[in-house]
Length: 549
Image (cartoon, rainbow, N blue to C red; front, side, top):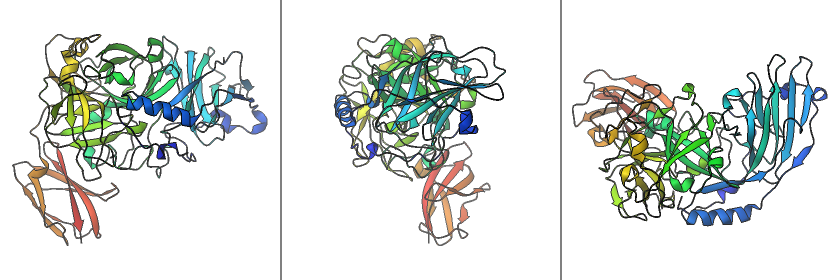
């Protein structure tokens, strides 16, 4: 992403005292030390962090991807390396320990990866402060490549567990070990704010109300490009065949020049978000490794076009992850309001809001991008950062109208603009694309240029457009208030209920609103600031800030 950031905070080492959500303890941890033989530590390549930062800053300033690590190429084979442990119950545990000096975190990439049904793979910090897994046979695929999530620290253990009754044997080799030097933090610890800048707004804060589907379409990307490991964002997209085809849209500059072999190592992470506004751990195991490159703008990543990349996720996305295939508008008509949803600095999912008309902008090629300016909202003033690249810009009708190339918004300059490659240019407007986006997203040849999205497996059922409720359509008086407030509606929308949050985004209470009710008592609340989210009968919401005296 074409931004320059202050990296001092990102280089801090984060505490890792808590275990990640969605995992279970590695089986070896349940046995006493006298039953487990640990292997010696194998040292793999390390890196000079100052040199990496200098190199990656130059890449970003030139409009490239945000990198946060490097690969230490090192092959080990489960058949010939590591240590096997035979357990009293007939199960087997294989262990391999490695170190990449000075890394804030590490992960492992595999080739020839194949696990039998019932076998489990884990990776854990050598001090047993953090673990990821289990990974199982559902990660097997035709190309045999797989990557784990990150674990904290520079020393880690790979563990394979095979119960006594499992049929078959595991086969795998390591391709490389990742050495991460920035944008690493422990999301399982609720006190840890995360790696992005402090003005960013969690997607499950009040600003995210009504954008649930769009939220579930957005994914975090970890991209391998030779020895580089980097971060971007993307989104699942619907097609005119309404077939839930596992297409994902992002920006070309995130993966310009990436080989087909390295696309097989691209990791897509779903549902990486805090469940409440600013609190709660985030899932790190909802991921798929490997995509197929389908089409791109062939413009150097926005130098002479709209900067798009379309890929197909190879392995089946689990239905329990609630994948949403987003709709889109390729007419080029723009939007007067909407949001961007993204993973800044590889952090948990964030949301940024705009309330003024998009303007057509020059970004390498005249009219290929939308210019957007973010506004302050009830929680904070969301912007974008490195790692947000490739994320979608949604219009008021919940459709994608662009994907992020770059810009100059920062928490220190939140009113500066960002630039999104236009969906209409992705569609059929680039000079020399490898293929137009239209070829794949209009796979039913309907000539539609707008489409709504939905959750799998119901991609053939569209979310219907509703009359838009504006922020100004609802007023509350007096504010500040000593107790009672009056609700005023400028148009004939019906209210269903109101949800009250404190300044931390915690739920205080929810109240049903009877038909025609225009008064609300806040006398039971303590003095302070509250956010009142009003739910309308049509499912839309408006949030207002109220001070109780």
